[in-house]
Image (cartoon, rainbow, N blue to C red; front, side):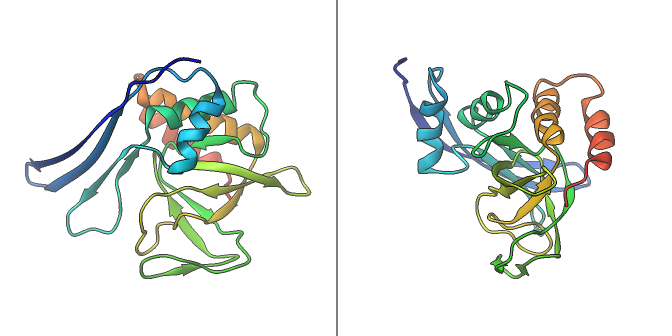
Length: 199
């Protein structure tokens, strides 16, 4: 088992986007070595379901633009779907904005809203989802692992929705295309997300 070196820092960056808005980025960074097993990654995620990462906001807006997952979470997600099969406990990372149909029987409360079965809310790029069970027709019931507190239409952490197993695996592939900066990735992700049913 590889030893891991860790160091953490808190960074606040204030930048002005010409003629648009002020963007504040709060980032917690962690340096560590490579995980030798998926259990190592899971052990870290268990202490914080999102893992070290960052969230970018526009001031004056409740709608987060982008979540940046930690290296440990990305590795966990990629190992989860490396066999092109989805099991309970597997992770995927949402590659972009998408409306989903809530499947929770009990009310999930956010900062100023609540969601229950049949409601619609939005998911965002970089947020992990975890496979928790399967429906009778073979779809994956997933739980949205959003960090922090949501306001308005964005889904709160704990919201559950359905996705086809092949689409669950594809989410990780699409996210990595974005992360690796592949040419045309954003357009391809947006196009494919329109075809993926998250209900």
